[in-house]
Length: 407
Image (tube, rainbow, N blue to C red; front, side, top):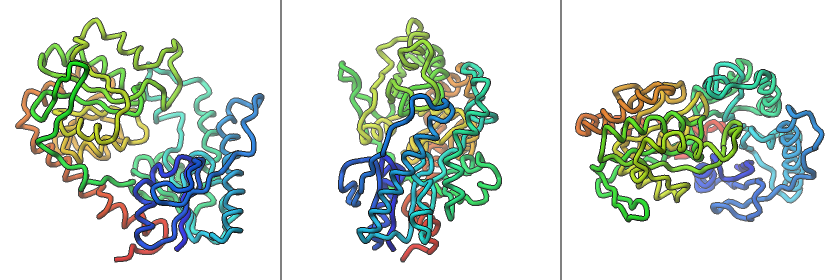
């Protein structure tokens, strides 16, 4: 089959899937906004937007107009690609940026799968979850408009694909019935525990290894959507109770989700200022954004990994931590509860309660032998339900091609 992947930042979610499809004998190409002619061995055709966004457009339509502009650019690029001889049998793409809006009109014959990462809801989801960051009065209407291009793309698709049941459940019923659930997959054969793992911390060249009281917290950016404020507020309690503990925070200083802080300066600095006089900063290590292999080693030496999130997209990092045998202390929010059963393959805490977070973390640090079963169960759960090769790849192949994966 000829398979086309569409993703502005290709490979994105398809970093494993696209090369796998090529290895299975399919002819694979990509359309993206990147300029490279080959990405991960996959031929890539770059699209260029014909225009920029309008300055005077209604503010609610800013993302919608940008989506239409991208959709138009992808449609033109796909038209030319087909004229040049590549007529895809299957098209797979991320519906979140508008790139999938018009592909049905260019390739009516193709089987189209749209990646349905998130449907925005003004109530009962991320927007109104945390009262400390109150939503604007018009949030419900803004969310409705923000979903227009996503709805259009999914209506024109043969099937939608969502990585978790909870993410799929955010779509209205008439769209949910078109969506299959399959996670992107975790390469559990590579993400394995290693007792000899170690990392070096800070300018003092501190060596951290298995058995040390290392607390890890990982996100693309350190922000409230991922519970950074609650975690920082737990640190005075943790560091006072556990004098040998060290904290490693991986993440940038920008904002990935939601509005920027009104005070400026970023959330990282804001919530550090709130607690900096109450903690020993020499035991708190902000490492920024590091290479993937460094992150993996961080998790291998982690005594306890804290993952907090509002009801939103589940991070790969939580499942990667579980695959590496971490004891995860996670927020008792729906995306996490879909994966973690308290006391069995992880531990759950109240997202809003820094003292409860601290108590749970300190309890894990105080009894490392007692959580070995939780660590083993965490890895076993990810291997059984999220392993890329054995679970997710065969299901992805079935969903996007409509046929079983070749033996």
